Image (cartoon, rainbow over all chains, first blue to last red):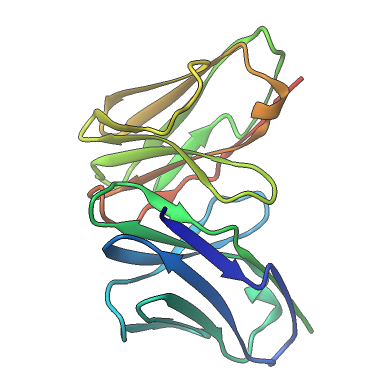
Length: 110
Length: 112
């Protein structure tokens, strides 16, 4: 069964304290691994798509990487405005569906 | 308006009411989706429309009825809902079914 698991469930960081979020996936024939950011009361905001193992993408303080079994979202020197829930989702070749994880709630304190 | 819009943003309805949620995308996309988001649960895909044709119905109860009159508009008709249907309902669109999805702000639904 296709599955996506994110860890940790919640993460508290001091401003400037770098860390990584994990997304483990089990999907038959991965066509894409997607990262989203969701602020309270809002819809998810698209961040990155990764297609193959070894691929990396960056945006400001965020860098996403992909292996054959998991993806990491690295946050370098985070700021309070990076506080949000980060969601990952995996899509397989033989389906239109995205399988979402439950997210990591990140809080960055000044 | 740009992106994906949803109306209403908040809805309170009784179990015997009938209401509809509306979604509109201004991105020129061809696929549209309805998701349900409940606390502490992953996003649950409800329906997928690709070029106006329904391609996915994820075992959703018949009290939820989708309608996609064209590639830019998507509706979710609601009737005789249950309190456990209270959730954030999100609409999304993508250029193609396999592309990244862009979400609207959601409708916060409360069933009393």
